[in-house]
Amino acid sequence: MSNNEQSSALKVHKLTFWEAAMIVVGANIGSGILGLAYSSRKAGWPILLMWLIIAGVFTTFSMLYVAETALRTNKPLQLPGLAERYVGKLGALLVFISVAANSIGCMIAYMTGSGRILAAMLGIPNQMGSLIFAVPAIIVVWLGLKATGVAEKIISTGMMVMVGVIIAASFLSDKANVSGAIYTNWTYAVPVFNVAIFCYIAQYAVPEMARGLRHDPKKLAPAIVMGMFLTAVLLALVPLAVISLTGPEKVTEVATIAWGDALGKWAFFVANIFALCAMMTSYWAVGGSFLTNIVDMFHFKDETNFFTRLVSVILVCVPPFYLAYSGMVGFVDAIYLAGTFGGVIMSILPVMMLRGARESGDVEPEWKCGWYSAGCVQTLLIVLFCGAAVYAIFDLLGMLPKAW
Image 1 (cartoon, rainbow, N blue to C red):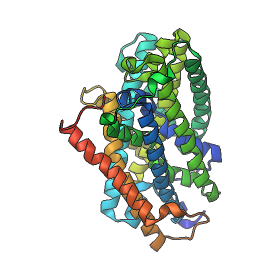
Image 2: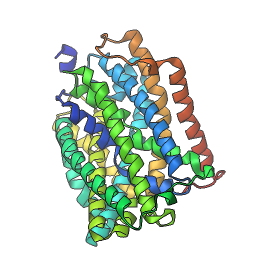
Image 3: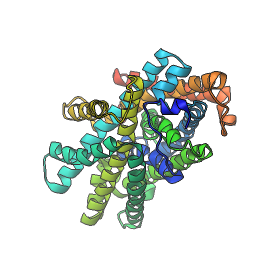
């Protein structure tokens, strides 16, 4: 470990390839996958699949830009630190705002979604369900990166087994009608892209992964690609299974509630345990990353200091719970808005960071981005994500048809 690394507030904890890949899966497979069926029910599954492929490919490019930037930097830094180093203080502020908006949007959705699920399963108030969910979620965030990596690997593996079982049961059910999900309505197409962006935005997890794989940097890009591939498969199959089983008119905002009801009591519990695991793993990845972003942005001296960690955890965990029950933000709306405006900043800043790192980075890394870092690809990435944000602004002003 270099002197720069030793002086960083962020500590290095080794991750394995699968722990790193599962951080991507855990970060991505959360509230977004539960809202995809509902948000795409007017547009149709083929349009959703198209956007999942496009958003997935370009978000992977953006994540790989962040990966190369992190590998060119000796000192372990989070996104605000990398942005400040290579773009300037304004870049650091914009990245932090993006991370905060996306993280808080995610965790609002986790709080409302978990509350509804546990209320339906246990017959308790929504707020009590959210509090039960929050306890193990906050404990792992407190424990840090290595605990997150191990917990993600265990729970994400179990989560994929559960969702595999319930998807298979859905398609084998006599109620399933796959052809009933294969329809398109382009009037409602663009907002689905914004939700797809949200489901993939895990750039904030890349510096965490780079920190954990500093001992074997060549595994960083493959871990990102593997995590994104597994994410894409799950994001495509779950809405198809839900819409095929329930029909578009019966899809609920948190899809697993209607999904489980259609298959029977066993599926109700399996589907909703999957949903809770999905939100839990995503909470760990998002919350842990947001915590270290706070440490990085405000230049705290040591992330392991008790007072520093206590203040950071409070900043991470309390606002989403308050906003979830303030009545100001709905489940799918939180996903939509966080994905839209977080996506704009996270499309532009990684491009600028990569260019800055190639000009003034500390080291020539063992791995570098290939053809997908060409200027034309970077421009297309920015245009695509900014165009989605422009659409969202007109949507918020009531000038476009509501997508859900």
